[in-house]
Length: 121
Image (cartoon, rainbow, N blue to C red; front, side, top):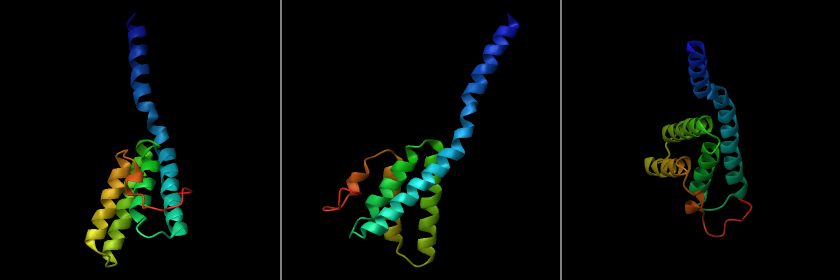
């Protein structure tokens, strides 16, 4: 009986911690989502669309799971840190970060979608 209880206990512990192997896969796929959003933003070259693409990239990555959310946060924070060091405005950086958080928190990125942006995006 003790062996059975110990076995069940062990299975429960291992099962709860066994999802660690998904994290790196989610992170890589999340980074891919961020790259796709960036590429789409460059391709669209649409006025006032950057916040939409920030939110969309973060949203897509975060939907992958904890690894994707982590990748989105690291990439977003690094990008904004570099932009600030290169002399881009702090106000624009904060607005980008708000869009990043909006997407990562599971909100609809279309909140930032500019009028007339092609449906392809």
